[in-house]
Amino acid sequence: MKLAATGLAGLLLVAPTAGAGQIDDAQIAAIVVTANQVDIDAGELAAATTASAEVRKFAQLMVTDHKGVNKSAVDLVTRLEVTPQENDTSRALKAGGEKNVAHLKKLTGAAFDKAYIDHEVAYHAQVLDALDKTLIPNAKNADLKALLVKVRPAFVAHLEHARRLQSSISKDE
Image (cartoon, helix red, strand yellow):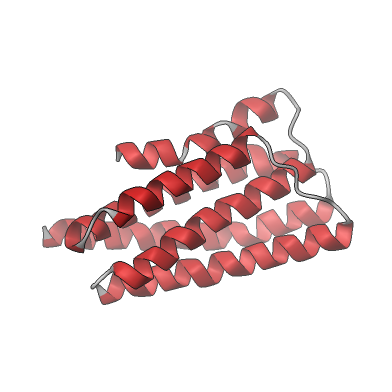
């Protein structure tokens, strides 16, 4: 789980920034797009690597759903003429995602599946925490806030799905 924690460091940076009142909609947009891309990249690798039909189905769902969220976010910021602004959180998320993918590429079989799903559980839990405590409360634009609220149930479903897979993988060991 150590790698999952390092991959989540970026989301942990959100709270102090927000607490200081310094996070704005452009930064939130960059965080949202980056967080989704991290999961897309891991999902694409998992779909191509795993031998498990259940893990592949989950990974493909992550790719599809997170691409959909990113499309909605990009469409919204384009319409609002907001340019996503990279920040410490979005940069840390990107670096953590790259580190996670690099780690996963070294694994095969059951070890790959376990590492991928463990990361998905930790990542989705942290994303939900960031949505609830930082991103939604600090979004100033009503449309951006509405998008974040709208996609939240999908992240809850992803977390529940990942936990079920995690439980079944643990039983198979």
